[in-house]
Image 1 (spheres, rainbow, N blue to C red):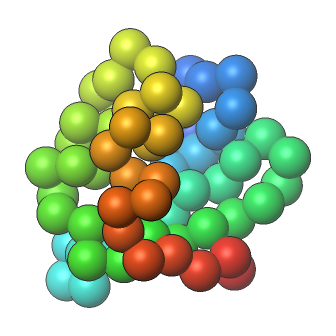
Image 2: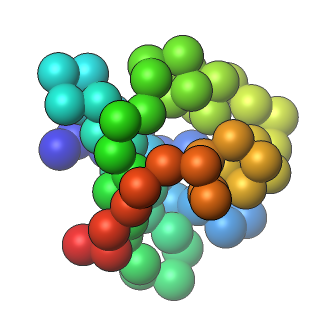
Image 3: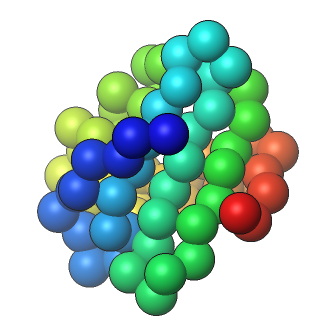
Length: 69
């Protein structure tokens, strides 16, 4: 999956696959996670958020199934 860099102190890059509704998040520490069944609107909100890490914590973590890659 292709990821794009984001401006964040915690997150390095994010990517999204619309067909499978999979969100991929690479953190600055090198950890890579995939979140499943994430609507495109959540991804769009994430990449346009003033705080990517804050948006991720409030709207993705603990809401969607995930797997460390």
